[in-house]
Length: 181
Image (tube, rainbow, N blue to C red):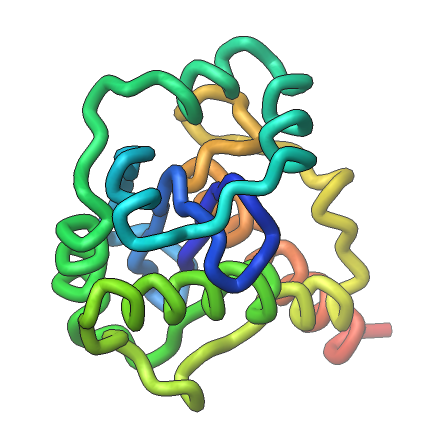
C-alpha cells in the first residue's frame, strides 16, 4: 500500500512525503513500513509542480499536519527517496493505492523525472477504492486505529488506515456473500 502527500494535484506534483506498507494478503498484517520526507529543493530541481491552491489548502490544515509537511527536518532528495522506495517494493506482486489515478501516476512521473526505472509494471497496480465501494465502506467514516499521529495527511498513517479499511471492506464483502441463515 502506497500513499503520498503533495503540493499539487498535477501528475508532476511536488511530493512532500511517501508512505508505504508491506502486508500479508492472507491476514492484512503489516510486515514492514516505509516513510520518507522529500526536500522542497529537490522537487524544484526535478521541476515538480507547486500549486498555490494546494499550498493554501495545506496552510488551512491542523498545525501538526502543517509541521509534518513544511518542516525542513529529516528531508531527503527525491531521487534517493525513490531509489529507497524501489528497494522497499522489491518482491511486491501488487501495488495498492487509495486511488490509482493519483498517487501512482505522480510517483511514475517522479521516477521518469529522476531518470529511474519504476519498480512496478502497470498491470500490478490496484485501486483500494474499488474494494471500499464493493465492500460498502466509506473511508471518511472509518475509525483510525494506528499508533501514529491521528493525522489524516500523514502518508504512512494513511497507508495503515487504508489497509485496515480494506480488511473491513473485504470482511463486509465476505459477510454479504456467505450469510448463514
